[in-house]
Image (cartoon, rainbow, N blue to C red):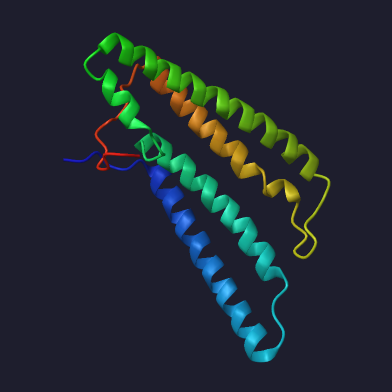
Amino acid sequence: MSTPTPTWQRAAETAMAVALGVMALAVFVNVVLRYGFGNGIAASEELSRLLFVWMVFIGAAVAYPRGEHMAFTSLLQRLAGRPTAMAVATALIRLLVIAACGFIGWGAWQQVVVGLDSHSVVMGYPTALLPLPALLCAIVIGVTASWELVSRKPLALDHDAEVE
């Protein structure tokens, strides 16, 4: 029996589906208008770019707790018979993930601050909305990796693919 999906993950998946649907509709309408009538909607490209960035980072935040990010399990499977070495490798991996989240979060925060005073050319939204999902994603993944480190959650090596 599988564990139920947390509410925040279902909400994130719904947000990604809505973003994808709006992107597809905006691009489709823009293509029809450009090729059919010689004039498109200028905001379509900006809206699609903004939604794509949000969709990617929401997806990354949802994928991490599930263990669905790219993994080099073939390297770790050699440690499967040695519990101490596996525990050290797991802790090291989680520390590296936390450090990477710190760097990404810091850089994204700096871009958010810079973007607060500028606005997009066509739609006029604050450009801080572009790096904001990277900051939020780094926080979610960093907190999750920290919890996994503290709780000593083992790495999932039971992926379907043999080589990743």
